[in-house]
Length: 509
Ligand code: NG6
Ligand code: CA
Image (cartoon, rainbow, N blue to C red; front, side, top):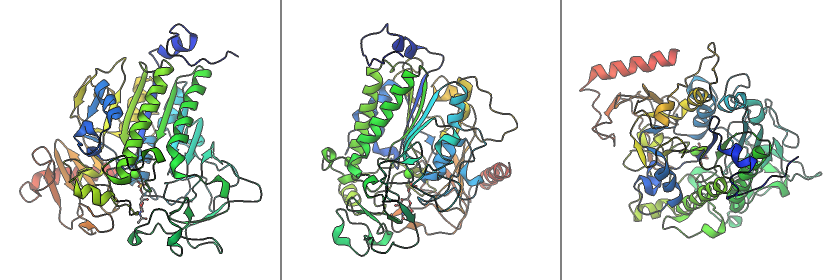
C-alpha cells in the first residue's frame, strides 16, 4: 500500500492528479446550526466579522433567497438528506436525544446518490435524526440503523443536540470512550437516583439556564441539559473541545478517502452556533456579542481550518463547498449567555432584514446563508437572488453525477444544478416553509408568500421571536415587502386562492 502524502506543492503526485480530476468533484457541505441570514459580514453584519466565510462567497456564488425546508433542525436535516418535505411524515419534528431513526433505510438519500457514483461518504458533527429502531436505545452497543444504513460509509457524530443527552460522541454508531463497568442509561422522563440535576443544583452550573425554558436536567461540563443520563462518565464530551474534535475528524475522513483513491462526499454538520454556546476557550470573550458571537467566530475559524486543509491536500479547485444553515437565528434558546442583551445594545439583527427567526413562519425562519464555491466551474464573486431550496441538492447532485433517481420513487427534490452553479438564474417553481408549529405551513412563489391560518401565540415568549402564526390568512408580497410588514390577503384574494390551491395540491401528492 502506498504511503499517503499531504502536500501543497507536489502537483504531480498520484493523489494530487487524482484530486484534480473533474468528472467527480469532491463535495463538502458545511451545514451550520441556527445561523441567521444576517450573521455573516458578507450578508451585512457589522457587529461581527466572518472573513473566512466571506472568502467562500468572494470565491464562489452567494444566494440571497435560499431556504432550509423548516425553521427547526430535524425537519430541515430530514429534507436535505432525503429530498423530501418532513411535514409529509409524522414524528419528524425536533427529536429528543433517545428517538429512533426517522429517515427510512429503504429510500434514496443524498449520501446514497454519492455512494452510487463511487464516492466515499461521511457525516461529522450533529446528527439529530434519531438512531436505532427500538426504544430504549442501548448506548453500550453498536446502535443500528443509523448513518450507515442511510448511506454514510463513516460517521462521527453526537446523537441529537448539544443541549440534549446523551452528551457523547459516537464513531460508526458506537459510543466513544465507554468503559466497562460504567454503562450509559438515558431517559427523558425522570432523573436517575443519585444523579445531580441542574434544577436541584444550580450552584454547579458554569452557565445558567433560563428557568423559563428548562435545560435543567443532567449536568455535563457545568451545563444543564434536556433529559437525564447516568453512567458513561468518561465518554462525555467537553463543549469547548467540540470544534477541535469535529474539525480533526472531518480532515481525517478526507485523508482516508484520498487513501482509498475515491472522491468524497462529506456532510459536516457543524455544532455551532446552537446552544449551549460554549466555544473553545480561545474564542471566549472575543466578540462584542456574548458567547453567541464567540461561537460565530469559532465557526468562521472552522471554515478556515477546513479550507486550509483542502488547500494543503491540493483539493481546493475540484471540491464543491456548500455553506448553509439548518434554520434561522435565535438569541435566547434556553441559556442566559448575554446574547439577547448584547444584540439589543448593538441593535444587532441576526436575521438581517427578515422578520422572525428560528421556529417562525416568517422569512428569517428558513431564509439562510447559502454559498457555493467550486473554483473549477463556478465564477467567483457571483450573487444570485434566485429562489433555491436545500431539498434540491439530492436531485441536482444526481444530475451532476449522472445517477438516475428511481422513477417510481416519490421525492420532492428537483434538479436545479444550473441555478446552484450560477449558470442560470432560474427560480425553483415554489417552496414550502415549515415552522415549529405543526399546524402552519407557508408557500412562496413568484415573490408572493401565503401562510396558512393557525393557532399559537404571535410572539413565542421564551425565545422572544415573532412566530408568524395568526388565525387569519396571511399574504405578503415579498418582492415589495421582504420584511413581511403588511398582510395583503384581503387585497389580493385571487393570489390567496392560487397559493392555497397549490399548497393543497402539493400536500396531496
Ligand atoms: C427546543 C429547545 C431548544 C433547542 C431546540 C432544538 C426547549 C425549551 N427548547 O425544544 O433549546 O434545543 O429545541 O433546536 O426545550 S434545533 O436547532 O435542534 O431544532
Ligand atoms: Ca438548528
